[in-house]
Length: 267
Image 1 (cartoon, rainbow, N blue to C red):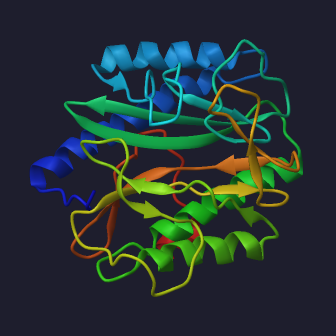
Image 2: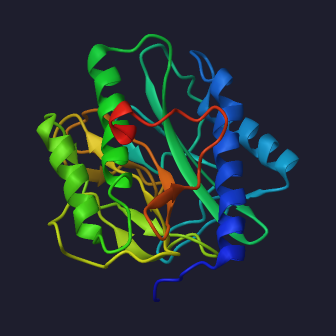
């Protein structure tokens, strides 16, 4: 499978899908407080998608070797790194949860995730969520034609490890368009000047998973999806879908209530 480059029509389709994915996260935000279950968050998201005329890309998604994914989004709580399946356990004060949404609109995919803090959380959890957000933007702000994917991974890794955190290796960002997962793979670690060179029209996700403890992860239970930190430390993730433009980048998963970029991005 080779990299697909989006033309003007494709970019417009991606903009729409990306905005709608972000608006699902906007919609569920006020509901995420102590006592809500992740299954209820999933139901609210599905309700929002129905009003948008979009559909969930995750519901029934089945890559080779996996069971069909059973929900409209992923909810990864505390030490769950990614692909957490919504369930009936209420969230409690102090939890952190990543909600990862991918919608399909008119054949185009929009993919984004955010961290949510449930009630008052510990200083350590707050810092992990903030540093992970900044790490994602450290990667995004390097996107422009001529840069290599290794430059993006290196920027994220250097920043996160410089703050005393570790970067998950087994999962990465990915190209996206008329398919959920396209080329290239976007690693969140690496060496400058290596891997594919960015060119205008490329669209891919940047979605670092950052652990408070060690980088090692493992499968949890037997649902075929849930990934947790091996040492049970907290994990956080943020995700945007980005387009390589002629001069730099455009973030395609922005919405009215999306968290604003850190100050260093515009500095």
